[in-house]
Length: 145
Image (tube, rainbow, N blue to C red; front, side, top):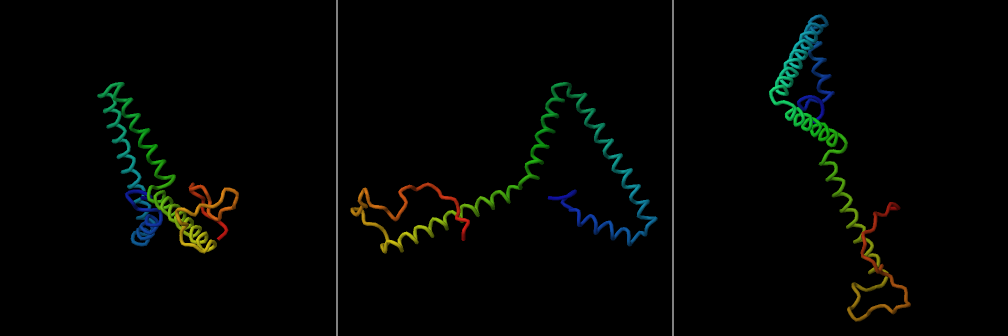
């Protein structure tokens, strides 16, 4: 959620434009001043409430409130850096690309050898080059496609 209460910057600009059109320049300026006063009063009331709560709880309570503030700030920073849904979508996309790449490589290997799958008793000779890789580690996606 961007902005305040899920209202982003674009929506705020549209609301401001509508208010300016409806109220005109003089009324819009009065409304903005009044809104500023109300916001200041709410902030002061909140600060007084927190200060009173800290006084009531003592030094241990102040430590708990400070820890809660730090956790909240850390959580907000993490969400701003990379939202979870984007992280999950990126991870899912990478897994799908990796499985597609593996399927493409195994299909290409089968086409080169002309066999669907090697028979259990037909292992390649120790000195002969094998068409199939002998490791099963994950390979990064091929960027040349």
